[in-house]
Length: 169
Ligand SMILES: [Zn+2]
Image 1 (cartoon, rainbow, N blue to C red):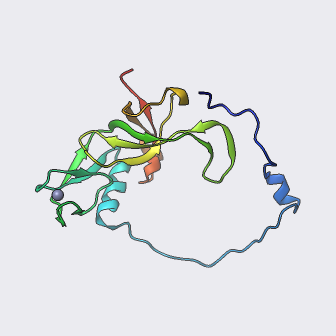
Image 2 (cartoon, rainbow, N blue to C red; image 1 turned 180 degrees about the horizontal axis):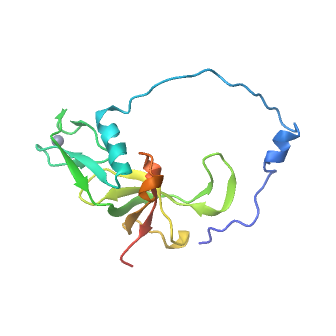
Image 3 (cartoon, helix red, strand yellow; image 1 turned 45 degrees about the vertical axis):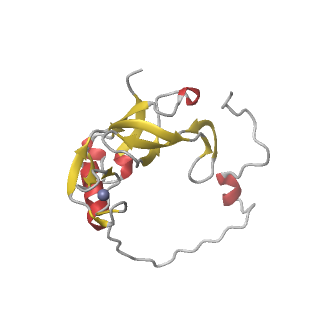
């Protein structure tokens, strides 16, 4: 199976086409000031990412640990009980090869979005990118570890982890 694309059908849209007015373009700057609270669970999750740690919540009744954390257990229909500091390792639960970026720009070397099941959790995972591997080598169940940004560059965002990279090969 080859994943490298040599030619794309169609005509790609270029920055230059926008500047030269070759496509319909509307400039509009809405006044949209707002404040959005991440809430108790995701608020701490993001703060801990800035500290270089992944945290989850555990339910004492069923034992499940969920990440990203939520304050309730949807299996037991009750509030869960405690914070758990997790490792920054896990396995690839599922993945895809994406030949376009988030803004639909076509790329020849695919991004590898994946659901990473963090070690210590059972039936949940976080969506992130896999890096430092050939797309053809990615497999379900592959062990990976987070590559963190340096502490000064972290902002309390999931992008404080650059990507997950294979370990133990
Ligand atoms: Zn439970």
